[in-house]
Image (cartoon, rainbow over all chains, first blue to last red; front, side, top):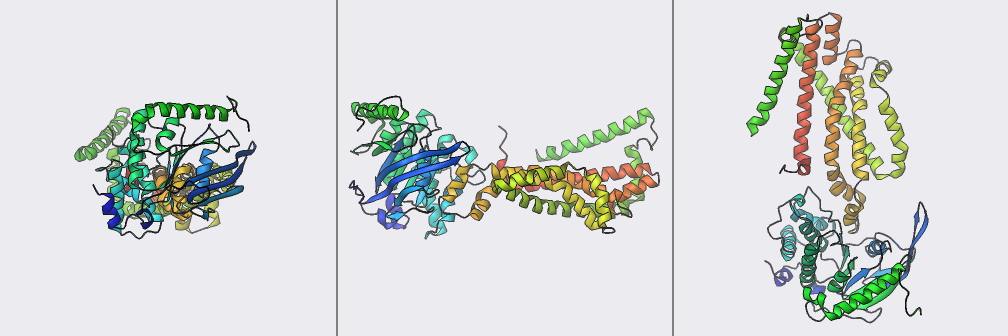
Length: 292
Length: 253
């Protein structure tokens, strides 16, 4: 397997990631993703649907923000806003001190549905973004880059297989590689593990940590799984019910690599209880103690 | 395995011919009621050259009509697949157009372009066969999951790139399914025109002359020749499908 150093030498990893990452939690400074006071209303057949209401979220460079919230609260709208696939009615979305007004190649996306192209091999699927995004890599380096990522997620030896020959978890791993192949600054994950069984999901959580250690990116993860948000995120945002704002933000200090056993610690149980309570408030099933 | 794949249909065909022969023999039907396979050989032997010339005419007209149907059908399908408004606007028109029996259109077209045999025939072959192609392409495109589009759109890809890289290849299995239907329809179109059009050419005209001259074995011989052409063209489409959309076929296990 190729190491991170091999890839750096080959110029596959942009220089901005070769320096050590520093987290900067100061508001407005060094944030890679800034969602500022965003409101959005959809026109539907049943009348206007107000989904987002003065939403504010900031994710520092290299951070990993997990977003949880009740169903239909506009979480997927949020991913489309960050990806530039939509422009909000009100408010602004900033990526790297640049206002997002259209899609940009510095974003990678993965969905619950792995949407692999059935007629392409796994390797060719992973390389798809490199056909769209301008890249300095030679053809050979592109193949090496894709092979490096596939090996990183444990799909070594499956390069020439077709998606239909892979299991659901493996397809999701390949989809993850595709979203990372062009070295995006921002990785947007919209419930990528939602359709997987519990064991496969836990496997993929660990893979995510492995990937994060090798491939620096700033992540936004939409999920319905509170344990997943705690295991993967260094910041968990609870969105309120529709129209949604950021109701509660929990910072999870990152002390050393996380292992699955951490999920059963007293600390995690406490955080889970808080998050569950916040979700109940968001769903309108519980009242906030401090309405202020 | 390969051998078996060819042998089985051949044996089935021979059994079919034997049963046909037996049916005619057992009922003692004269050849004007139902010709038997043994009556066909003399017809082929006598009109061999005509069968080759007319068969070629029928074949090329059908293929040209089909190619036209593919181009126009795909274009209409694309317009309907990408635009909701165009789909709502064009669907009733297309369905209505398709519902009109083409046998009724044949004399109209024949009168409209008197004497232009080739053009008329190709036109009818086209008119009868573009509908399934247009519908399948439009359904293939309009049912494309939004995530597929978003994967490329979020990277800043243009609509054209999305069409070439994802929408088009993803629609190919449906397209070939429709093309198999369109092949046989195009043959019907070609022959309708060839039979009806005065001083026509092609196998349809040969069929018509068999009718005029009470040469019943000739009429049956034409039918069989048409069937053979249809089978050949169908399997050419199947071969193309294997090449371009073979990925859609799952290995049976």
